[in-house]
Length: 91
Image (cartoon, rainbow, N blue to C red; front, side):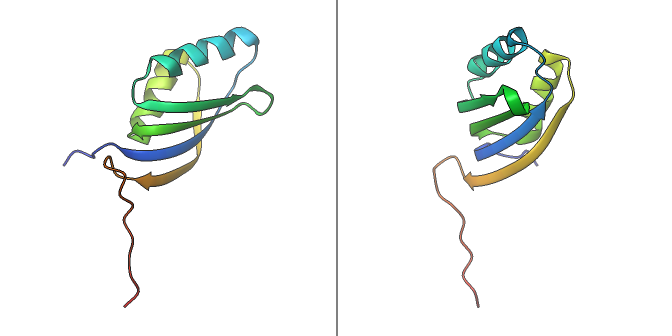
């Protein structure tokens, strides 16, 4: 069964050596329609993204386009495509 895109917030670590690497990363992120917002922290080699995507697919796309190792540090499930967050009630 295919996984449906949900709202995720994901933090990744990728080696960004120079300003050209940051510009290339920014261009890649801006062209990905599923990503709504992003934050690149060059000093710490950390990229935070938010949007409707499947985390593993986005990490693979970035790895292929940047030709660098991508380490997923954190994935937070914000909700499904319609903005509903699943809540469980204690029994």
